[in-house]
Image (cartoon, rainbow, N blue to C red; front, side, top):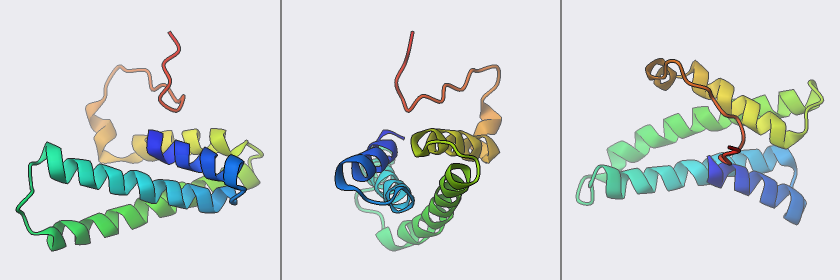
Length: 118
């Protein structure tokens, strides 16, 4: 989540890019870094064919980018929330709606951009 949030805030605040475009670019950067790390280190798939995995990745990434971008836009525009807050809320909502959330029980979901406040 850190590459996505850093891209969103960096592009919007430092480069003056619209927050909707920054959100989309952040999901692309985050997804590409996740894909590269998982393919290279987690699954040790250095010699495996790239085309099948890349095809599935593009479909999943397109859906995730759409959900995040539309969610941030809607929450910021119609909910009046600042875009960084919208990004965190939408990321949590998309995660909780996913199949991965079924494996988490009895946990507190800290929506703070990856910073621990203990």
